[in-house]
Image 1 (cartoon, helix red, strand yellow):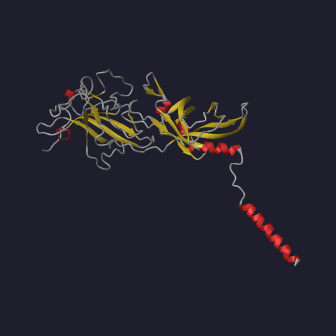
Image 2: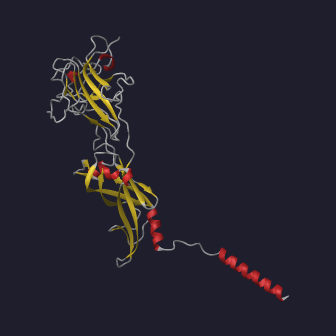
Image 3: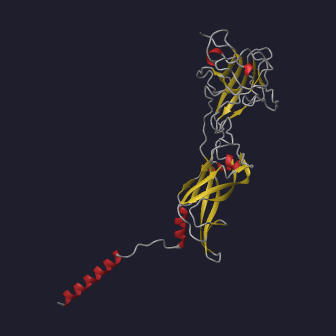
Length: 371
């Protein structure tokens, strides 16, 4: 009988322990450090805006650091058309990634300030600081300056990018730091493009009322009339592999400004681009030429010589030769003194700085044939 009573008592004690264990309240954050970590994890958005990263009154230009966040384009993007914001990518609780377009010429070696606009998902609480800035207990966006160098050699992926360590702190009423946590803003290049192709319709000239690209230099049209600010597109010769595919010097992809066909009707593609053969005082610049994002043009030092003449020292976009200068009315991209054909060779280098395509622009190319 005593053994049975003892057995029952032990069973009741065991049941009590099980009930106590099952009803134990769930635990919240064990420390204030965990609470702060949860607050940081609730960063909703970090963005750099054009409005906060511009100069001039009224604003008329982006800071060099803000402009560096966007891939270089040709023709260049105007300030008015530049994107109004650049969002950073929040990765986990501690890393904020800012992807900077690959650019071998990027060299902001003196620390520049980017103003970041930060939004939290919830109120941070009282006496919380980001660096030396006391945060308002609000979810309203606030600005915070981030100072950094942006130098290509330091931004490539193999280096890990350029980092700025920021601290968020909670202080007591006397200003003593109770606990703090670091997080990192990383500026790093994205993967570069290897595109060095000028599209068949992308070698373009903006018609002008005076100076280079005179309307009268191009074929006369009536419907519509050739007017200032209209566009003339150079003709691209059909590409044949291993012959004129741009893979090497001597195999240039060729664009042409052709003399007018003697008779017929149609647009420039069938009738030619020039009213008559351009001479040494007929000036051009391919100011509307479109390159792949991040790509740029390389030229050499060879002057135009011989008949037909060939050179490689003139940038077709500016119309200026290596080491040369031009006036408002003249360029080095021009017709030949004898009205013969003249070719300007150049190279397009892709954003990766390695991939290249070889091109030439021939002025006074033969008129189109066919009906």
